[in-house]
Image (cartoon, rainbow, N blue to C red; front, side, top):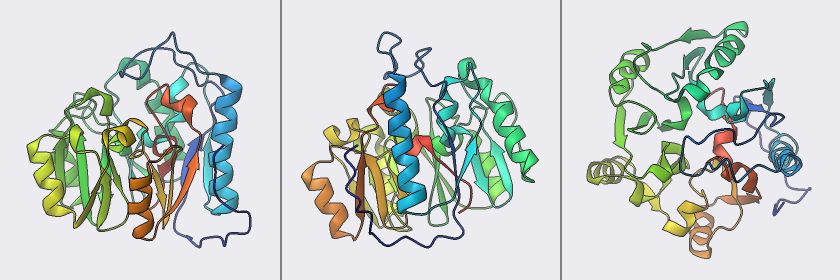
Amino acid sequence: MISNYPDGKPAMSLPSLALLMCRPSHYTVAYEINPWMKVTRQVHQPVAARQWQALYDLLTRALRVPVRLLRPVKGLPDLVFTANAGLLAGKAFIRTNFRHPERQGEEVIFERYFRRRGYRVVTLPRQFNFEGEGDALWVGDTLFLGFRFRTDATVHEHLSKILHRRILPLELVDKRFYHLDTCFCPLDATSVLWYPGAFDRYGWKAIETHVPDPVPVSTADALRFCCNALVIDRAVILHGGVSKPLRKELERRGFDLYELNLSEFLKAGGSAKCLVLRMTR
């Protein structure tokens, strides 16, 4: 672990926030559904477990954020990436329709979890693909929706009717950044990290027009999954190795960086954000 958080750091007070995670008990690279996954480059299970535990400990002990745990299921190795469960809006849970059959078995697990906890479960028509927080991220009251590789552009219309909020679709153009949360990270209501190379010209214009303070990251930082950061108030949790320029930009804006080694999850195309679903906002 490359963590830089001191034990004596004051805990944050975020009573409205809770997160959902799933231990990587059955996590492995069992198939290849994005350019990062290679079945010949296997996960080291004990290391993955330690890396996941470091993230869990940081959230629950240092930052004191409530974390709910989803029970792992054998045969569903990507269940650990709970960000893809769906999208929560109050007590409504808009369930994911996974594009790839390899992950569709997760849908019933997530739906059952939220239904049992009193959430109203909303499902989109089966013909439309939608991969939850992986492709749907809030910046203030605006929802940015990534589409093309995992989520369909037409989902934008369904979400508009459900959420009654402004939704801005962004087309993704680089398969390495197959979900919006691999190349776009809201920091607060006015600023985001983003990798320009992952978007088309319309996406550039939409981001630069509607986000007051977009912070571009380099290709090297993007490939380290710096945009797949988890932001808790002013804490930015991300995979280690952040460049000095990006670190300086974040610190200048008053953010504290927490770097963890999440290398085992990069093997499946995920990092800190992919491992967590926000249960409130």
